Image (cartoon, rainbow, N blue to C red; front, side, top):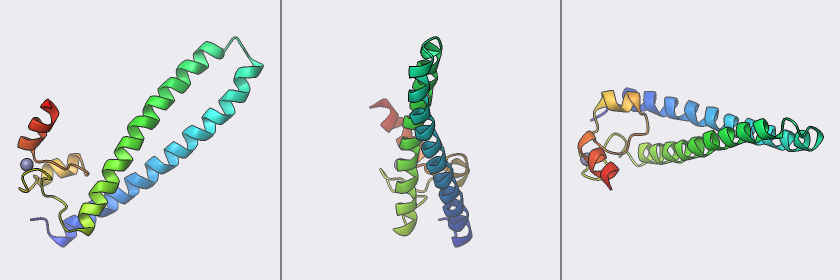
Length: 116
Ligand SMILES: [Zn+2]
């Protein structure tokens, strides 16, 4: 099992990541609002701007998903189930958690989940 120091480490990392994503999402939506005004002024740049906002949009969606995963991980810390697999209940390798702080499945179950 993870000791308290390790759990605290992941908790801080998750909270910091959460704040970063929240800020990013806020900046993206502000930029998009500003972009809409510009599109009206300059038709020539319209195509490239649409592409940019599509990319921004994809990043926002990806980050929103990550944010949801982080919330789940923080809930697991509260429930004291953090670091255990949602599917089989076995311990998730700490090295795996270091790479992906919000990992919910052990390596074996992850393979099963991804095949579905
Ligand atoms: Zn598992």
